[in-house]
Length: 194
Image (cartoon, rainbow, N blue to C red; front, side, top):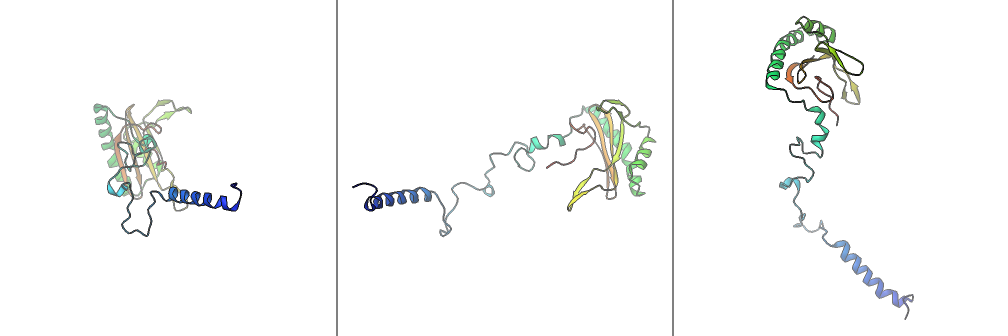
């Protein structure tokens, strides 16, 4: 009897259906079984993702790679001490301006220049020509459905090639701290990416 007759296809089709059902159901968990559990441990049970890098802050894949530009470089101990000293000089000036509710870049720049700093000068291609102080407006931030630029000023003081003071003053607060330069933005803290 040939396989093209109705009788020949019946047993063949039945075997195929049984085989497909067996292969597709193998290892499946069914909601109707209240004792069913996953065969592998979940993250909540303490299993770590295989993609987490050592030292990854939030455990996201590629955390260290994605945040490398947000890490300042190391400072030598002597230069770190110098940067802390300069941060100590800048902090009271920013606090005074904050209490006076004066945080526009021109006012902040003028107050810091009175401490004896010189404005940093750079060429169009980024070569430093002299000076150590840069004061700019705040960086735009995403809020609700668009970017907004808050009132305030950002401050970058290059103390040495490996040491900076990064500071800001704005309506809500102020800060001045010593750190090494950032790989892509020098003495300014880079914006968040993703």
